[in-house]
Image 1 (cartoon, rainbow, N blue to C red):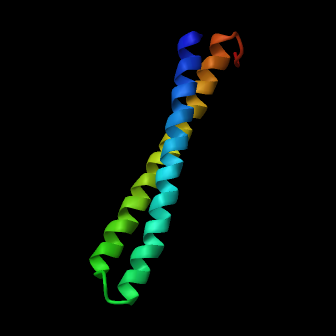
Image 2 (cartoon, rainbow, N blue to C red):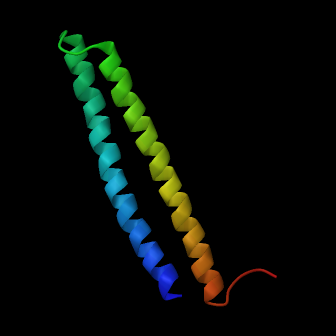
Length: 83
């Protein structure tokens, strides 16, 4: 049970950090797009930034899934569940 609680805490921290990364990458997309419009960045840089943001979003979703799974395991460890 203590292990499941620790896992939930770790996943919560990981989720918060990944959310910050996603937010920064979203800002970076706006910035690089503005730079592109002014001729200071290439379209390839826009694509790389969008790819990074997309992959970070996927990782964020995976962390959230792990949080749900850990919550279910904790619930089961406490005696809950279906039979």
